[in-house]
Amino acid sequence: MGLLPDEVDEPNQPDNYPPSPASNRSSALIFASCMRSNPRPERETTALMTWVDEIRPQFTLEPRQVRELKGMVMVAPSVETEPLKLHLLTHAAICRLENKSNANSDTASVKEVVDSAMKQLSKHVEIPSTSKEIIRTLGRDECANPARSSYGDVGKAVWARCKAEADIHDFSVFLSKTTHETAFKKVAEATGKKMLQQFRDDILATIVVDESGKKEPLNLEKATHVLCKKYVKGGSGGASHQFRFAMIRRFMREFECEEEGPVLKRRKIGNGGRQTQDEAFWGRFDKYLKEKMDSFGINLKDDKWKEYLAETVQADWQRFGQPNNSLLPALPFISNNAITAVRAPLQDIHDASNSGGSGNGTAAGELPIEQQSDYDHF
Image (cartoon, rainbow, N blue to C red):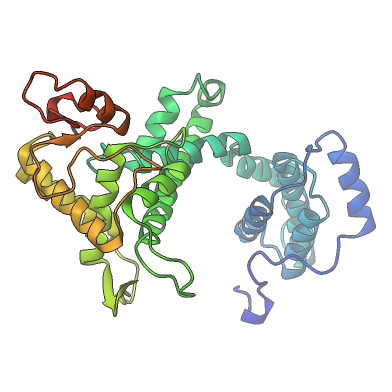
């Protein structure tokens, strides 16, 4: 029989009353050898609270019993997650026996209930926090990959990176077990998708005015520098990153934002429900990118691409400000509408102007497009 609405706990809210002294004594004995060096992060505590809510139906726990379990989570902040879950499952199994006995129903054997608890525990594999941080780093790096032809597969790309770099990041032993590999894949793909949504919000924040009005939009050079520091593994970016961010910023200006006087504001989409992947931002941008690749090809040095990128960058400069090349090397396009020449890095201009020309008919400070290596194909 279902519970009445007023009997249901608020999600992830621990009981204000700690477990009984007997529970504390037994917990202390069980957890004596399972202590972690630092207290549990708040996000793990929140995840444990959610997990307690999830096992409630299986063990037919009453509201007070759920509060007891959550209280145990709060009084054991230094206990490793897996031993704590095992203890919580054992306690939940005992509660189930008590509930059945009180209801005068057939009481299952202790072995049956404990086996059920162990089965539930075996389904859950806890990924170490250090591994999760590495996965997030790979996820951010995949989001910022300027050669990406589709953002819909970022999650799969993160999982592929985890497998390819397993030895580097000490994932190999963990991935050798089938159940662990399945859990790892789930976390990797979910992390990639989560990072992608944050990536979108961070790019959008570089062109729109926030609600407080205190944060100003960034020009392309500054935005690329800030985004690469956060997302690119190693923290540095180049011309290819600027070109990709210029494309995304243009798409956002044209399809995701609206003018409010002299500033851009994020367009509010009221669709009354969750958008499907094709309707979501990256699904729409993937379609936009594919249209460009179908029209211009996959070689970014093609004249059609150079014309489009020059137009896109110059429009960005006009709207958000010119670069001063103090944070990143100059882009391989001159500042006017000509697109057949590229600008050399600043350190090369002085040498070229003093050499009297290279003998190949190229003006000082310009290099043939074929010599540029910072951007190439998708």
